[in-house]
Length: 139
Ligand code: FES
Image (cartoon, rainbow, N blue to C red; front, side, top):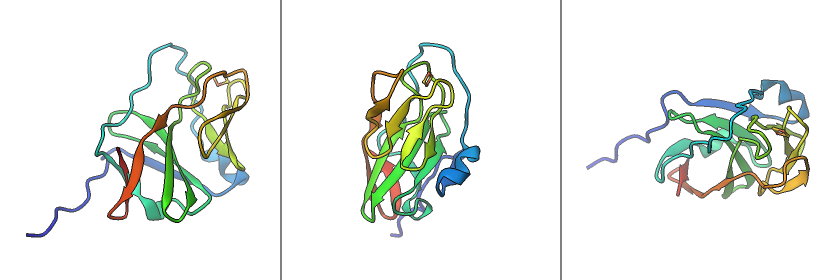
């Protein structure tokens, strides 16, 4: 029996940042609310890992509205972070090696979400993820 094809979010938005020049592709909306951001369900397939070049990041919005950043630090390694800034909820974007919030300038490490520059005090929320059958999968 053949395996079913991989299921990806139907309304997924994927933007691959290819360096600082592509920062204009980033989303820059501010939620302005203290609501916890939605996170994807375990087992959810986010995108083919081939869409994230080694050393780069891709923005993914799941069908349920979770805004994520998938970073591929090495050939067989992915890091998935919530793209929602922990300061006031704007969406971070990749700039060079880091993730930067366009609202007040907080800067986070793309490889682990650590705060490199405030005003944010908390790191970006990390989402457990793995590479499975060529896809980035939550869990
Ligand atoms: Fe990101 Fe303020 S919302 S720094």
